Image (cartoon, rainbow, N blue to C red; front, side, top):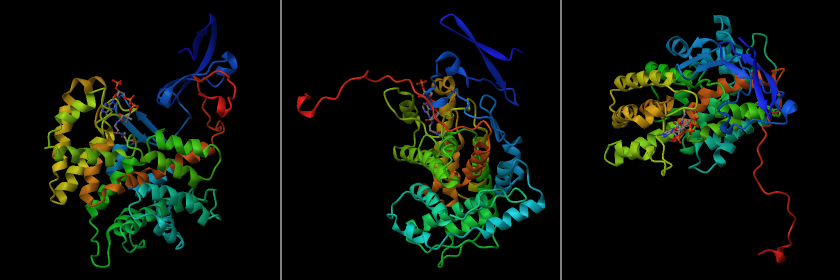
Length: 429
Ligand code: CMC
């Protein structure tokens, strides 16, 4: 195959090298484009732009494939735990038993947060959104631990990464307790990562929390499915902010902010709000589907569509199975699930959704699982953030050690005024 692409501008032909990924995806390398031609590329939303080479996650949006470090997400959801998957993403290989034990011990050892941080938490207004609290507190965390090392430990388990993974989970639970004026529950050394989180979130002095292994398993799967998704908006934010060589905590804090938006991680909260609106309007999703198709209306079906997947999101299939399992286990009937299934059925048969390749994404059913587990609505995107943390860490680690890595600094096509001159205030009309 020809390893170059030809670009003809004003009758002159330029040859640009082709880059072929390990799964056969091809890219035109335009690194020298501006130097050779004086031109830049225009690609709003970077839909056609590869910003890096990566060895972490492979996605095929046409075939609905998602693999972390080569392992299909379906296999990891079936057999792995979130902690093991986090290790895999960050270090590139599944851990041996010894490595996994050491990683778990470190997660336990680093699970407490500085007591002075509680004053910060308590200063937020009671109704503050936990995503706002979490992004601020992750940034603040670095100022509490200025001595944190940034280099890898001997078995590849990095102290800073482990601290972040463990403390973000503790802080997420703390932000929930404090926002409700409840007593903070500390992490317990006898509990593993997911069980510990549920206990910190739900245990109370008047009602001890009983840990249900099926809910622990569901939470592990939920987090595994969210653990990485290559160059999504929040990961791109982490890489971009990190490219200025700011510390990891500041970069992750930027990622949390990007995730908060309803077009990204905030969609899991937005889906439940939309399903509740449908319920309140009588339970018929038809008018909502009609609104989503109307170009005069900015409304979109939340939990539908994806920049990369042009088929059913593989994560959505798994989360739907988990959803059925959790509801059956808890003997719950959620009317929102019935509405969601009705909505999916209507949309999947509708020519607008078929023609636009719009299918349910991971957020469509995940909110129903979280609701069944008792997670409050405003914590949904925080749950996504805890899950995405290993992805952000591994992508940051890869980007700062990339020999081709550069400060991220896109260009623009300026469409504004030509040069003009300052007019004193009294002469303006
Ligand atoms: N409902 C109705 N129309 C839609 C939707 C939707 N959910 N999503 C896309 N479209 C239409 C859009 O109006 C446009 O139509 P046209 O070409 O006729 O003008 C076309 O599809 C392409 O839309 P786009 O906004 O250019 O596509 P995108 O690749 O930028 O959109 C998306 C990706 C996720 C932002 C979008 O599908 C969306 O807004 N979905 C709803 C929010 C959501 O569920 N987000 C979670 C994404 S998965 C979790 C994650 O990774 O964060």
